[in-house]
Length: 209
Image (cartoon, rainbow, N blue to C red; front, side, top):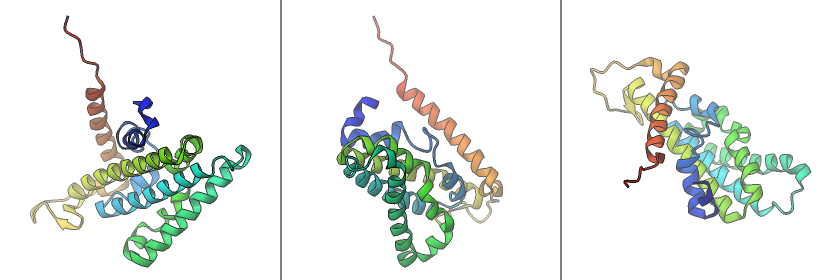
């Protein structure tokens, strides 16, 4: 599917499905495992990362002909850090509870492997439309993946989803799933499922002679 990345929707689908940053590329694992004890936290982190990805990809692409190869790394960091600061300030102003819950992981978006990798591998080498599609696809792919992971951990680990009891009063939560070890365990199970689905989807069909 790599050849389809030369269109906006191709770049978008690439991040959502074929090169999903969590389930395929396996980058940005620190926030993936740290904030996925609740679905609401995962959505907050995912959308914050998406905003930074889209904006940084777009600006780096627009400035790519003005940024020298020798200083591209510091330039990327300045652009990414600027948007992270804006997102952090917006969360503190409008969503203080979410900002307090995510804590240090919002400023750490600056060094998130997903954002820096897309700046280096894609935005710096492609036009703004493709860079926009790539940032949006990667961001939404990351958001979807960590929301699924967080939902599984919250439902079975706490008996709730978005803070609402969905398992009934008699359910005994599997507290292991909300612990760090539970994050690794749940991620491993989801990776197995995702890889099985991807293999079935990409398995070549046999022609009948």
